[in-house]
Length: 392
Image 1 (cartoon, one colour):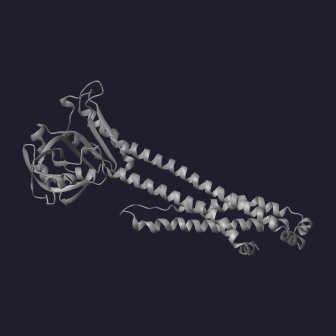
Image 2 (cartoon, one colour; image 1 turned 45 degrees about the horizontal axis):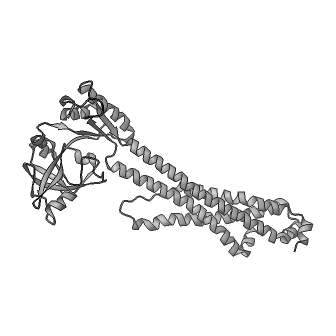
Image 3 (cartoon, one colour; image 1 turned 45 degrees about the vertical axis):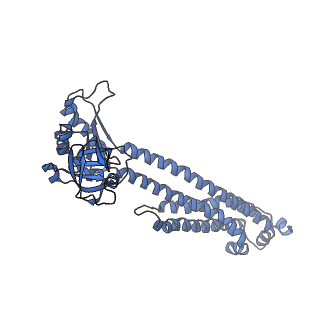
């Protein structure tokens, strides 16, 4: 009887269902956007260096400048590699400001000496040629890799691999072109115009074999706090008591990203629930009007023996059918949108639909329909048969 009543008023049922469709679709879409955004932001942060711990000497701001003996050395890096079990990789770098001559114009570049493992630990992508290898480090080979921007500026449309580049007083053979997997916008040692050479070769410019920054890559994200503490302890134990080192990781940034994601998810979910409440009020209003219009029908049913609870259940079922059907339609729309737009998104962009949100959206939508449909159903069940039969 509930289905027959809805079929008799198809347009009214469809319009009432529209608000439910929007509300349930909102919940699923909001969850999808929130999860996708969170995964994308975290993946971009981790692309700078997954599970990364960095350490460098503090040069000022603590009341005392660092002295020569405070500098981080290759021996410190090896002590970290050997003293902390389970590390994936350890590498170091030392950037200095230099200049190259491009088309007769002198340009400032960042000349960065690195140790083996730097490419892996910083997730650098080789676009052409190769990166520096262990043989280059041991032989102090006069080879370099260039950032994509510097290669384009210095060699224009030519293939730079195999050509010579003069940096300061030395000439280097270009063996590769690279870019950052995740742009750090110049906040790290990798600038837009960067020349990377073996750290062992940088001694010709600096006169020492110091390391400006040590990177240690933990095996898992859970190991990062422990690795951070151990790196700090090893550096302190190998240098004078007054030396100060900045040892940090990306956990704080990741935690901030997660907190921001959770806050945005809560706000967007509230918007979805508000849409559901509005649709629930619409169900209640339509059902109240329906009860008034069908007063005589209710009186006839009671006169022929229908009990009050049967009347109540009929109207509750009508509200449940409207909300349940609307929830299914809204969920199908919300799930199909990410599937449809996935081919249009950049490669590797994650789009995750939370099936928990699908279940929650369906249950909450149905519950909303029942709750807001109870008042009209109760009013219908409370009508007096004699008065209902006289109703015009």
